[in-house]
Each structure stands twice: as structure tokens, then as C-alpha cells.
Image (tube, rainbow, N blue to C red):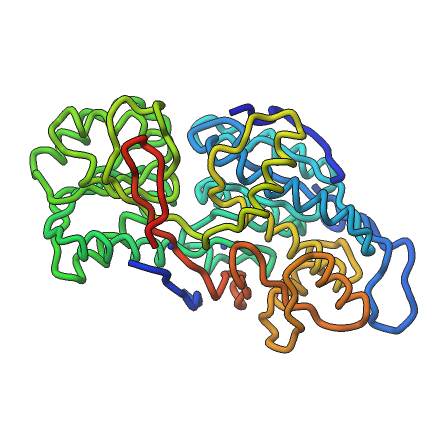
Length: 418
């Protein structure tokens, strides 16, 4: 997969579970509207929004880079083509991970580019390290994949949002799935960061709530390359099932577990490592299951993503994890900016709940162009996107979200089962 490197500028879910989530530079740098239409509160019609993206082009989560970057890029392209009163000037930078720390240089570049909104970071651990700085700079931050429950109560001055559900939901769905499959004992291998510990806690609480027992729970650090001790700890307890909460470390962990005599049909994966591995993993994953957020995507949408991404000179997107959430994040920011008649971070943030349907009195719409027309005609838009209804609550969490369940076939490729 040929993820874009460095900086570039472009114009450019058990079943389905629902959640009601109540439990994701320089100050003032933005472009001011050059022209406003008449009509009092009618939005400005000539806005240029400087948008940044901070997504994993390298590091342990880099397999999520192409789907998320394609979602962002496609949204920017379609918004600009709509010519509906707002143009997005996108600057994309590499997030890396908490081990490589590429985000440290990247966030400085984005703030220096006077962005007033940022899509990212992908990893909860990285977002925790940059969020306070963005808040201080007045930058709105929206993530398509942050799932740590900690963001719900973060002191973010209303500047943080996410289009992905909290791990409380994914952990509940996965824990129940493991129990429903008949497992009585569970071993968990998880990475020791905000993402891993949050999911470990949620899976443990749910599974033990069904009467099951977590017999071994062992962690590793992001950046580790050896996992023999963790596998030995799991093997010693011989659990009925094993949940692996990781990023691409799974490609090393899976063969170790199989070689230790633990068959892959006992594996349960999460969104951070659920991928079409094919021959990238030397053992069969047939029968392994996993969960990730989002509904099934329409072919038209994935075709558009693929066309955009390959048109930028990249290899085809391998899977579309969090692509819809990234796309919707951009659309919601653009609509909020249009509704506010401003590109200031705080002004955009003040309209995010409204354009997502949180106010309860908006007109339903399913594309940027459709929603923009409603806003430009003086109405209130309620955007429902490819990732679902979204509908932000007062904490910036999506009130409606779904978790898909997937299973590996003999070719190490995933198929959605519910």
C-alpha cells in the first residue's frame, strides 16, 4: 500500500448495537468571510477553511492510513466541487504513533499552517497528547477513530468531537459475542495505552458480567517486537477464547499463538487489528472473529473512495475501516463552518451539534451539497452520513453508532456476518 508520505496540500458492529453516549498555531488564526449575503443570520458565502489532517502514514496503525486519508481527501474534493460557499484548503501530516512520535513535528507544522480544524489523530493515545495544545490554540479537533472513553469527560472547551463510538460499546459487543459463542474462560493480550487499556477493561467487564472468567490479561508496550512472554502466559491458562487488542503487532502475535497450539478460531480481534491480511500472516486465521465500528458501506461510496485514492497515485485501498467516519468528519466540519459563517474553531464547534441533528429540529440530508443548500437557504441541516446518523451530544460523542461483526475465511480475508 502506497500511503502518501510527508506533507501535502489538496483542494480538494452480536448484531447491530446502538449507543446513547453520555459516559472524543495560534489562537484566532482563520480566514474571515470575504463576502456575506443579505438576510441577517444567513451564512457567509465565500469561506476558505484551512483544514489539517493528522493520520497514520507510518507506524503501527499505518494500515488505517489509506482508508482514512481517502475518506478525508474524497470529502474535501466533493465539498470544493460543490461550490456552495466554502472551499477547504487541506494540509495532511503524518501521525506516526506514540513510539515514533512523528505527531510532534506534524502538529507543529499544522499549527504553523494556521489550520483552525484538524481531522485526527487516529490513535486515542496520540489525541490525548495533542488535544490540550489544540484547545489552547482554539483549534477544533475531530477524530474518526478515537474510542477511548476518557474523551467523553475531557475538559476540551467544546472543541473535541469524534465520529467513532466509545470502546464501551465495542467492548460490550465483543464481550457478549465471546460469551454467546460458548466461551467460559478468556485470555486477553492488549497494548498498554489508552486504546488497549480501555478495551481490555470494557471486554473484561462485559464478559465477566455474563458469568465468564478472564483467566489471564497481559499487556505489551507500543513499539515492542517480542511477545513470547504474553503468549506463554495465555497458553498456561488454556482459555476457551483469546482477545487480542493491538494494532499491526497482531501479525507477529497470531503465528506465536497458533504455534503454541491455540487455534485461530478462538481469536477475537478489534478494530485496531481487524484487516484483510491475506498472505501477510503465515498461519490460517479461518474462524477468527472481530468487531469494528460502522455499517456496511454502499458500493458507490467505496468506488468513489477507490477512484479518488488511486487517482492520487496510490495503490488501491485494502479495506475501508474508518473511511466513512473520516469522510463524515470533514463534511460535518464544513457544514458547521458554513452554518456559522466563520472558519474560527470555536465558531465551527458551536454549530457541530446542530448540523449533526443534535438540536432535533433540522431537515434531514445525506450529502454535503444537499445540506449546504438547506443552510444557504436559511434552514437548519441535519446530516446523516455514511458512518450513520452521528448526532453529537453535548460531549462531542456520536449518539447513534453501530458495531459490525466479522469472520475470517480460509483466505485470511474478513467477511461481515452481522
